Amino acid sequence: MSLSAQEKWELEEKALSLREKVLRMIKASGSGHLGGALSATEILTALYFRIMRVDPQRPDWPERDRFVLSAGHKCLILYAALAEKGFLPESYLDTYGDLKSPLPGHPSMEKQPGVEANTGALGHGLSIAGGMAMGLRAQEKKNRVFVLMGDGEQAEGSNWEAAAAASYHKLDNLLAFVDRNGLQIGGKTTEVMSYEPLEDRWSAFGWSVKTIDGNNIEQVVEAIESAPFEAGKPSVIIADTVKSKGLSFAEGDAAYHYWKAGADEMKTADADLKKAREILENARKGLK
Image 1 (tube, rainbow, N blue to C red):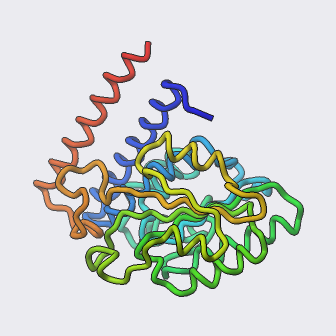
Image 2: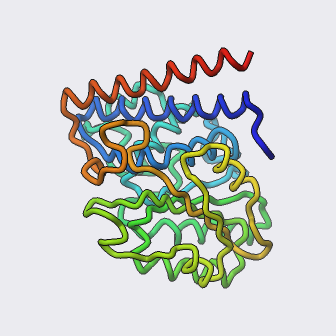
Image 3: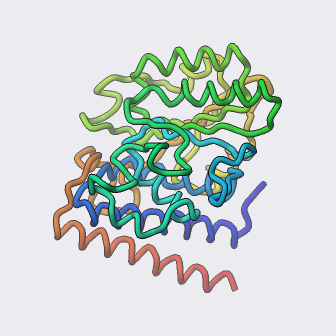
């Protein structure tokens, strides 16, 4: 279903609010995994504010959809979405980086309701999500399971065992995202350990594949809403994104995979997001 102009604006505003929250957490701690959090922002926005059935008042609601953040180091954007959705008080964001914080450097389901799985070691999330999808289907439930992986994470061999199992068991209630921002901590993904072309590889493992602009909220929503792409097959969205999307000095730069924020760069980051909000507010006036 196509988004109306109002719906598109509202989702873009949510995405900006999430980016602002990511910056708020980095201000609190002085550092954090910036790049992947900002490249995946539109995916989390679409899931939590358009697609997924979740209830912050009942985080263990049996009928909820599940989201697994396999690339656990991107947790800043998950925490931002959970705060925006009401799973946690916004004041928690200011504790990020503190040893006693309920928001550790990788997601912990023991510490924060709404987190479905402990992740951090790469290459495990797809196996967890596949198990969830199998379990829900065995219970004849209609819940859907979503999992987000990084493109650098594709080099983990465990992903491909999980991919083979998911297609063998025809898990069409499972939708995976690959956040293909092209960079990992060591440089370009294609130069560190290339698994391209990802589309052919996933297709060869029995998955139904779509490639989109992962920072275009309309394309993200349209792709998710059209899943499963084929009955009896798990689906994967290869989302082409920009690392550190939204911050002028950091976009497309592997050096900001993990950012230790300096005062001057933080001022620029504040200015970038302030300008983005002004543009959005002007666009809102045009909707009336």
